[in-house]
Length: 160
Image (cartoon, rainbow, N blue to C red; front, side):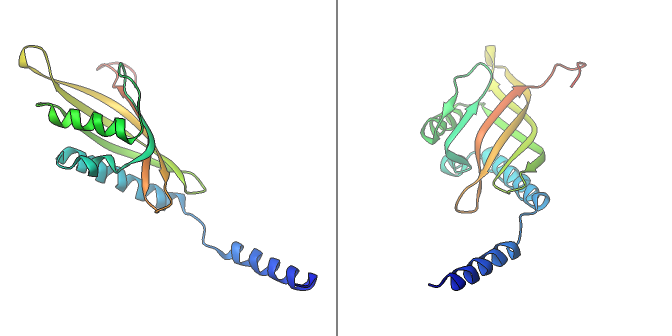
């Protein structure tokens, strides 16, 4: 290929790259928020472990106060299976915001959660919390959670 042809192809590629539609972070944030809401609904239904776990990446981590870090889908699937098999355990969450990077491949959601477990003497205990999840857009185009971090909500009457 001549130098002139090489320059022409480089110019065509540069123009093509410049004309490629960019990512709209606001639109992607809405998609991410919808994904987190769909995950919450799937989890709340509690009927299909594989469907619940499919929202995490293969290398995901789950961090909860006082618990060991769960890393990887196998460990997370075991955690979810144990929770679903325990009578009285119920987890719900509600995302209230999402942010996506300018590149459109990373984002996070933030919201509130409630974790209900059987307590002492058969009573049910619900701990309210907050969470942040870090998401990565995978090669298949789906948003998946790579880091899932929860914390207890502040006590009533304290600063948020």
